[in-house]
Length: 137
Ligand code: T46
Image 1 (tube, rainbow, N blue to C red):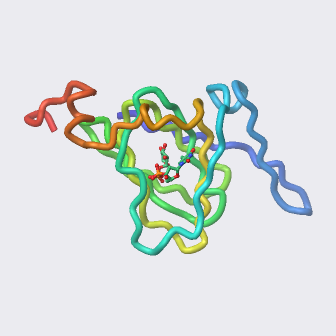
Image 2 (cartoon, rainbow, N blue to C red):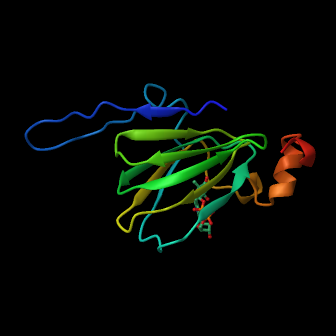
C-alpha cells in the first residue's frame, strides 16, 4: 500500500511559520469542507470507518496523533507530528485515528460536503465493498 504524506514548505521568518494550501496546486482536489477535532480524550480512538467517494488530507496542526490506514489487505500506521505534513486518505480506505496528544488539533480538508451515506461504518461491509474475502485479510 502506498502512503502519500505531503510535506509542505513553511514560509518561515523571524515572526514564525506560515503554511499555505491551495486547491489543485497543493491539494489534489477541490476543497469542499474543512473540519477539525481537538480536546480529544486520552485513549480515544476516532474514525473506524471508510468512505465510498470522499478524499481527504489530514493535518495534525498542533500536537500529534497516529492514523491507521487499512485497504482491506494491508494496514499501515502513519504518525502525524508536524504541522506542515498532510496525510492523503483516499476513498475505500478504512481509517482509525488514535494516540492523540492532549494538545492535538487534527484538521481535515475534504473533497465533499458531509454526507452520512458515503460512510461505511461496518468493517465486514467494508471488506465486501473492496472485494476482499476474509481469507485474504
Ligand atoms: C473521517 C475522519 C478522519 C458533522 O456534522 N459534519 C462533519 O463534517 C463531520 C466530519 C462530522 N459531523 C458530525 C457527525 C458526528 O455526529 O460530528 C460527529 C462526529 O463525527 P465522526 O464520529 O464521524 O468523527 P470521526 O472523528 O470518527 O471521523 C471524522 C470524519 O467523520 C471522517 O469523515 O474520515 O474524521
